Length: 148
Image (cartoon, rainbow, N blue to C red; front, side):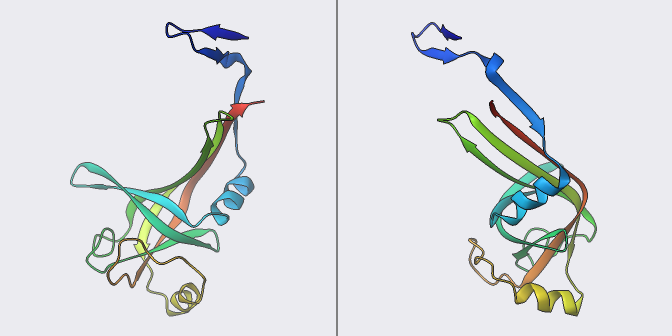
């Protein structure tokens, strides 16, 4: 059912819109199909959010940063969240996946060898980004919204 607003635009009724929770398997499929997301963490009382190129490996999300960059030289076991999404304004639908857990620099030699061997886009930030940070999921959620 279309309604008119005060500017004369016709909008579809929100009654046709639905949302659904994604399963853990759907979340991992979506995470594995992307290469860029956002990492968020708390720094001196402020929430900071940065875009990062990432790779999924053994149900963990990994990205590269500088040794003295965000999370690279910070405290180990810092809480962080990682988010990806997609939206289509024309279709009025989209989805979002949010992974929250502990962020830690990767120090395991075998894991580092595996990560350096994976195909991954270069970090957009430039400079030397030779520290891998891993976020092991404590909580993984996803949501799909749109017209059905």
